[in-house]
Image 1 (cartoon, helix red, strand yellow):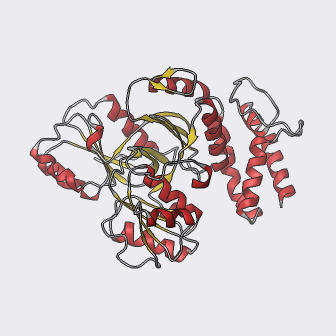
Image 2 (cartoon, one colour):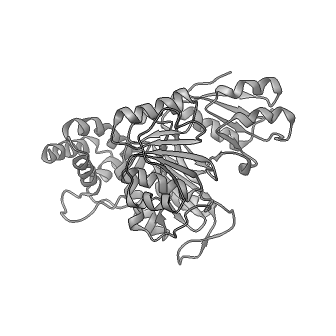
Image 3 (cartoon, one colour):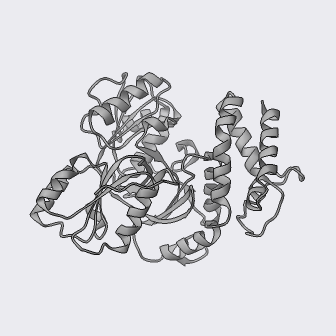
Length: 401
C-alpha cells in the first residue's frame, strides 16, 4: 500500500550515471554553458539547441564534443532524451520545453533553471578531488549559504568546484569519459516511487532510503519482485531494488525504468543514493568512484567513511538547519522588497557573513571553531536569539532597498 508522511526536506540526493546517455540543453548564455560543461564532465552525450552560443560551447561543437542545432527549440526536440535542461531567457520557451519533455514525453529528468515548479530535479553545488565528490544542498532555501559551505569544503579538502565556468578552470580539451557522477536532488513531493524487495525483512539501506523518501513527500509502494507486481512500475518516478535477483525473468520489465537504483549492484542502475550528512534542509552528499582510501590534498588518505564522520561532527546538530530555515522564511520578503537578483544576492551574502559589531570581520559560521560566538545572524539563531536575528535581517532589508 502507498504510504504518506509529513515531509521536512524538499530534495532527495542522487548521483546519476550519465555515461553516453542523451542529454539536451536549450539556451545560449553562460548558464547553458555551465549545464553543458557539467553534463560533459559526467560523460553525457550532449545536444545544445540555441540560435547563438558562447565561445566555449561553439568550440565544443566545432570539436564534435557536443551537437549544436543553431536554431530555436522546436516540437519533438526532447524525444529520446534521458535528461533535459532549459536555460533560456524566455519563460515561455522554458515552459514549452518542460511540458513537452516531462508532461508529454514522460522524461523524468527535467530542469528549468530557477523555476522550481517546472523541475523534477535541482542542480547541486559540487566539489571534487580525485575520486571524491561532495555535493551540497540547502533544499533551495539558501543558495548563498550553500556557496559559502562549498567554498569552505574546497579549502578543507584542497578540492575544486566541479562546475565552475570554463574561463575559471584549466581543463583538458576532451571532457568526455571521466566517469564522474552527476549529483542532483530530486523534487519528490507527491511523486510515486516503488521499492522492490524479495525478503520479508528489508535491508537497512532500503529502510534508510524509504525514510528519506517519505520525508521528501513522496508516496512509496513496496512490492515483491513478481511478474504481476512489476507490471505496476510504469508510472513510478523512480524504482529502488533491494536484495533481489536481477537475472530473474520477471525483472525484464525494469528495462523500461528511466530511474532505477540496484542497492546491492549500483553499476546496474541509472542512479545511486550517496552517503549523507544532513541537518534538516542542509544535505551534504559524499561519493567516490572507488571505495579504497582516497588521497585528499597533503593531509594523507581518507576513507569515505572518515569524510562522513568529519562532516557529520561539524555540520549535524550544530545550528545549520535552523539557520537555513530562518533564511528560507526571509526569502518571500526579500523577493518582494529587493527587485534585482544581484541586490538579493548582495543582501543574503551580507546577512550570512556580516558581523554587526565588528566591521570588516566575517562571521565564522562555526567552520573552524564550533564554539565561535561572534555576534552574527548565524550565531544569533544558534543561541536562540531568533527575534534579534529577524530584527537585524529586516533592518538590513530596508537599508538595501
